Amino acid sequence: MDATEIKSLIEKQGTAFEAFKAEHNAALADVKKGQEDVVRTDKVERINTEIGKLTAAIDDANSKLAAIQVGGANEETKAKGEYAKAFDRFFRKGDEAGLDAAAHANPKAAMNVGTPEDGGYTAPTEWDRTIVDKLKIVSPMRQIASVQTISGNGFSKLYNDRATASGWVGETAARPETAAAQFQQVTFATGEIYANPAATQRLLDDSEVNIESWLAGEVETEFAYQEGIAFVSGDGTNKPKGLLTYTTVGSHPWGAIPSVNSGDAAALTTDGLINLVYDLPSERTPNARFTMNRKTQGEIRKLRDGQDSYIWQPGLVSGQPATILGFPVTEMAAMPDVAADAIPVVFGDFTGYLVIDRMGIRILRDPYTNKPFVQFYTTKRVGGGVVDPTKLRYHVVSAGQ
View 1: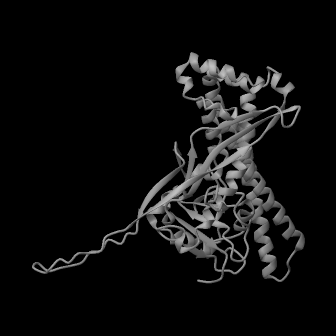
View 2: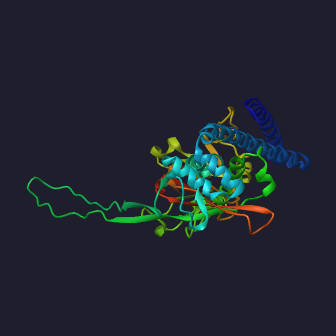
View 3: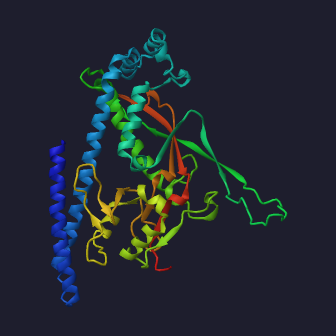
């Protein structure tokens, strides 16, 4: 899909949104008159669903264009390296000796060879980078969070409790000792994520098939799916600690992520979302955005402000997301639906969430377990968690204050 087709989708989205507003306004007028039209209400929902599909199609098209650009930029680089050629032979024939020979012929490439005690090898740097770059494109959290690459088992960060005390004194008054801040260390450990795609030996023998690109696509899809769940709701055990798990005081040295209620026991409201925006300190708002799933976007699309304007607005330019109250929206499929006491919306500066990547992707070629298929057991170590809860706000579906 090219830029022209994306532009066409954007135009269709704009037209659908105008139709949605007209029908929704008419439906509300019918309700006020006590003459609710079931057919019109159904039409509003169908248009709303169509807008959601168009929005998702635009986001998907932009992601695919970016992924193609990433892959294209690295293909020429990979093709030039002797190690990359040997790696391709390893994919097709299981020729591990070829990898060793290439490493000896090119000392720089030797830095990329993993220890073969499991029969596995670390992917070439450019191939590894291609996977990570594509994950940044297709994984919503990676697009908006901080990302740190490490070479060890985890990443540690020191936090002070901000308990440094001070006091006012006269010119000759005594200066007693004041309280000092205490430090607490938090370690963000990595868990192991894996994919195990399979291909027939006949496919691998076909010289017209770019095996590296095929495997990269398979790994990208599975890793992005698993990460999407873990970055939202992971419990931190052998996986990232999810965004929605910082609800209690002890979940972080600086406390829980603050919550703002919707103002309704079972629904979202315009006033609740406005309260959510203004609860975030002004210094955090320049990079702030909303995250939610597509169904929640559909609910918010019906809400209007005091000037009778819809608070959801479509993106009018390729690559520009839809907005709510002027702030961009990032769709995360793993976010909960709107329900009593749920957290369907998170707002804030998402650099407050840290994604940790352990360098290196390992591959074990297995031609024996599932004949006639050759399986490629691929692993990567990933972690994550909130580094600054003050940058984020939960929006809880609740009538409480």
